[in-house]
Image 1 (cartoon, rainbow, N blue to C red):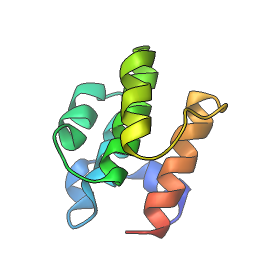
Image 2 (tube, one colour; image 1 turned 30 degrees about the horizontal axis):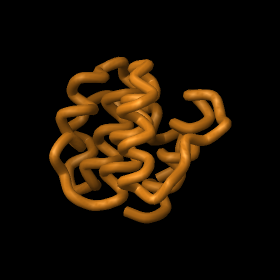
Image 3 (tube, helix red, strand yellow; image 1 turned 90 degrees about the vertical axis):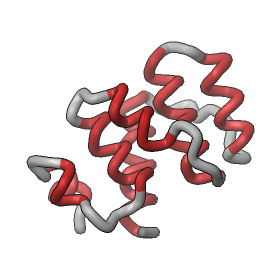
Image 4 (spheres, rainbow, N blue to C red; image 1 turned 60 degrees about the vertical axis):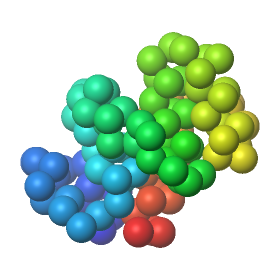
Length: 96
């Protein structure tokens, strides 16, 4: 699936069988931040931590974002939020 196809999905059920991280990013794209957060909150692994970090950065909670970036072995990027979202979505689309 391409990034544009991913953005055009109309409901979350169309992503059944994909990763929670990818579903979380879709929810965030559709302005459903809390649903996005719920999908990765408490999920183990660096990949969930990476998406979790982005979500807290978007929320404006930089301290919490940095904590999650550290858990993901990443640093806060010098990208805009839109650029970071596209980078994350492309990564998870390629690695699902």
